[in-house]
Length: 79
Image (cartoon, rainbow, N blue to C red):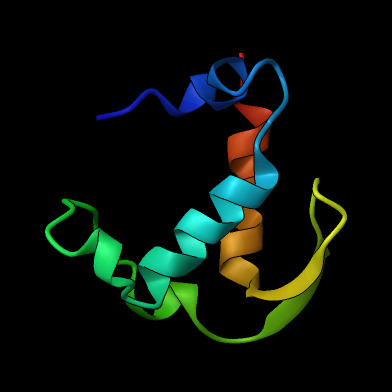
């Protein structure tokens, strides 16, 4: 299991928000690259109401609110 407290450290000291949001969103949508990956089934937790997020790359796009909350939590646990 990867150490999720070191995402920023592994990305050169800056939390990689765009990458994290895309990975979470891709997993939620059943992206082919995640087939066979052992992850819990988040099911409906990763669907529902969308909110627009301005990412660290200056892009804005909608994500399910649960993904936004998970991203916010991961940001807080960085060491």
